[in-house]
View 1 (tube, helix red, strand yellow):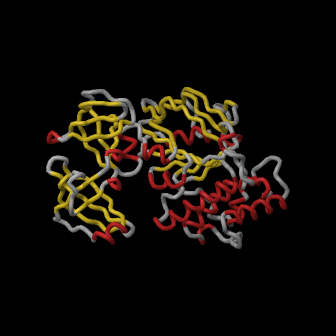
View 2 (cartoon, helix red, strand yellow):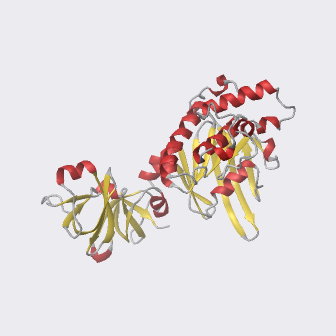
View 3 (spheres, one colour):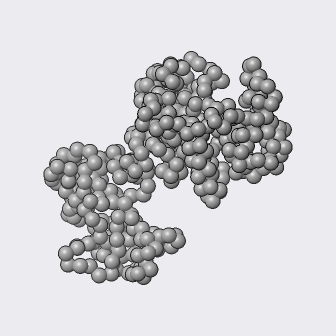
Length: 377
């Protein structure tokens, strides 16, 4: 594999879509697995499909790969409709959740398998050169003659990745490839995948139900639910400006206080919640007086204080539970009317104020700008 072919691509902003789904739907009998999917995937980006099991994310991936044909709609690669194009004729490779490696072949033989299936078959020295380069990219030099069953889970994943990139696909599809790895190894492989994607300049599309994985790796995330795309955006956009309660609850952790809009001024809304309490927040989408909404407050936006300044009113709460997590501490607190909610306190704050204990009475405070008013799902 010629390393010059892996030079980083031009700025993503200057490139058009490498793949598109246009009003794509897929039915399996009475089950609508994909419902009117519209999505443009830009050349060189790392995009993730994120959602719970059964939301349609794997179906979308298999439609791009050609393993499933859409019931309606169009699939485009490089501007060409490929609905009827066989998977092996598409410039697409896939890394499966369980890797699908051949146990009777060596590492090098597994990686070069796709090259050997080409017609006409590349010369042996070209295959060996490309396999060697792929091994260097995934940092498995010296493992050429190992058998798959002699490799660890993380090493097997690298072999599967090398086998996919050796063919230089325009799209690399990743179907929950890190689900079988332990937490520490999964973190390491997330970084490794990002580095490889940036080095190669390929378009990576990841399917995952792990929100942390999607947030840490993606240029954009496509949130799915019930076969539909709910919202697409950068990790920061989805975290800071979720379209509704579903997105806010799926991307990161949030506390929700349900209520009814009392008043609206510009993008600011006053919401009446339990106990006659009125909470203020920024409305991400237009809302109307009398509409049922949820006020979302991220746990890290809330502070706990033993003393409450007169000009900074807060909510009196009782600590129910305390979980020390190293870089921060997670508190479950309860307010008489608002109920139970979560607070994350950074380690630095505890070093200065001291930890809070279960049963302790405190004040919970958050800035008005830290609360979002969201439409119900």
